[in-house]
Length: 356
Ligand SMILES: O=C(O)CCC(=O)C(=O)O
Image 1 (cartoon, rainbow, N blue to C red):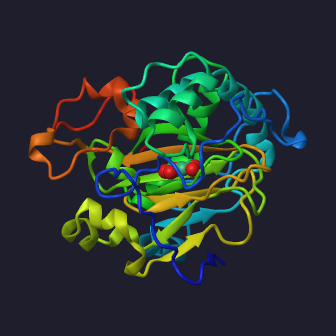
Image 2 (cartoon, rainbow, N blue to C red; image 1 turned 135 degrees about the vertical axis):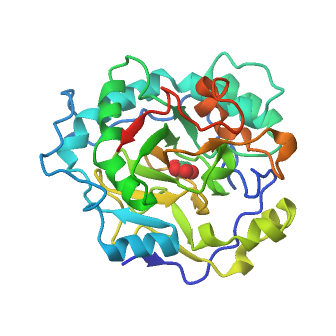
């Protein structure tokens, strides 16, 4: 059963807005005071290992058998769903340590991306310490909610091929089932790292950051270790993906001030904290957020894989839109956007067909 909070918390007032929802750029806590890098990311001892991921079992998951009718109905109504034990721990474990090592190697690049989003006029930092100092000075009080590592499935790194395999297998079949679409493309992968003391991820909808003219978009969120009750998972505003009135009638400012009056039931994954191998799913317009990661906790990293139904078109140019695409995730689409004209069907090698 899902953990249902008694009352929806006031849905984040935010200093900045992504399209019609608060961006997921910061949090209520101050930027961590320590200037050195946070404690190293490490897998739980039982998860260490460096073998290639075990082959997924032969039992083929297809869109037809991925979920029960009751689960599909719940997803339609609520806009989110939890898949328990979608993978066994031993299937994912071999991917985890190489992935965490890569995140550590690329930490400075991730801090640079945060600076470019939160303090776009600041100079490129040369170290993590410098990035933190720049953000403290120039981010207008906005705290860092996470670091993002986009599209590690691309290229030839140690983790790229296993991630591509992961993106094509049962996750793609689940996405096809949830979207009710016969052909599915991978939009992006992204690892979100919340270091100890990082702030909350504000309420937001993913599609506000995606330059596609579609509603058929879904994201799988997989923690890279078993989470404890204090670790920051996602919270979902149930039914918010169907709240057409919200962006239709309300200004960005009004929505940013207070979404709490809309009566959303706020739910986090039910049945206890997520384990390695569990996944949560949220629809492209579902409002979701994540609390701050406690200072005394370990870093929490989560792999996200976002899918869309084949046939979606790139949005028209800004002058024809009521709202602009929020630039926070621009790094995720930068490599193909120029090759797909406005209004054209989004088909590109970097948006591979992964199902159907
Ligand atoms: O992991 C987080 O803190 C944010 C993740 C998120 O916003 C997403 O998966 O869309």
